[in-house]
Amino acid sequence: MALADDLVTINGIPAHPLLVHAVVVLLPLAALGAIALAVRPSWRRKYSWPVLGLTIVGVGAVPLAQKAGEQLEAKLAGLDNPLIARHADLGNDLLPFALGFLVAVVLLVVAGRLADREGTAAAETPDIPKTWRRIAIVMSVLVVLAGVASTVQVVRIGDSGATAVWNGVGTS
Image (cartoon, rainbow, N blue to C red; front, side, top):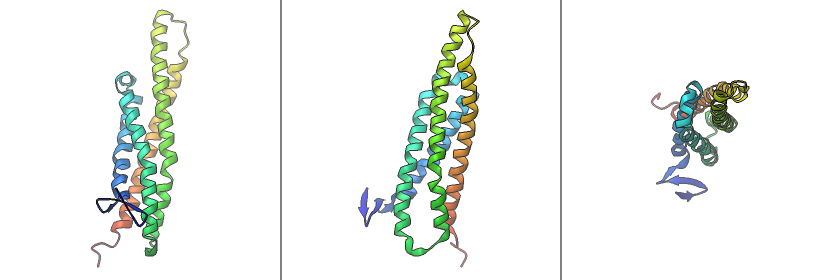
């Protein structure tokens, strides 16, 4: 990585379009994995840690892409393009969605593990209430909603960025 005029570049290319691809790929992929865990509780034992790791990396890429985007926006400030401003505004809204999704995934993994233990204990003592199972079901619903919301935001932001870059190309 090189720092040229306060703009982080990788082999001369602004870092933002490169870092953005980590978000565009990893966050929706994490959402798909987390939704699969929510829908198929039997997969939680085997795939919880890889999905949680993918979610952490995807969410961690968001502030990196945002910071590089802010640097690029500052570099392009002279263009006065309202599409860039719209893209930046949408981009600033992603982190709360991503963090909410991460929290929901963590809680699903924890509640799912405790529900599995509760199920094992209930097999021996049927009178044990299934509190963690109920919490895991609620967390499953929240994971689906948060995963879909995060993915929709990524698509909206990506579309606005592509529009800002390609608007007017080939229309002259």
